[in-house]
Image (cartoon, rainbow, N blue to C red; front, side, top):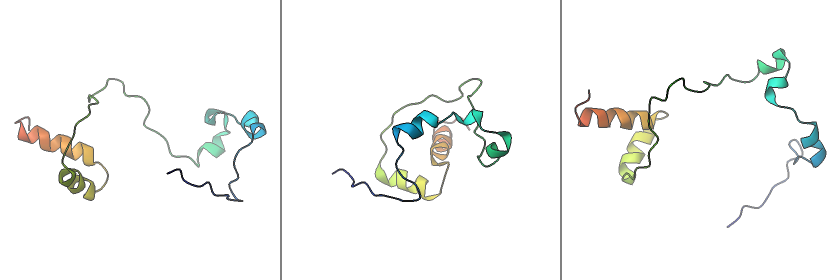
Length: 85
């Protein structure tokens, strides 16, 4: 079921005029860039391979319950299980 749009007077929906005025973030003045966190950037050489894997809900819940980094923790657990660590 589609979600109903809500109107927020502090953050109105952009108009075509707004999009025409918009500029990429790298064109912001240096003092404005300080307000945004830095990103990691592209990897020099990919160290992991993206895959799709189906896991039981219990396993996913257990790892997610420990907080961010749950996919890396699953990777570590699998390395241990197959004798790579």
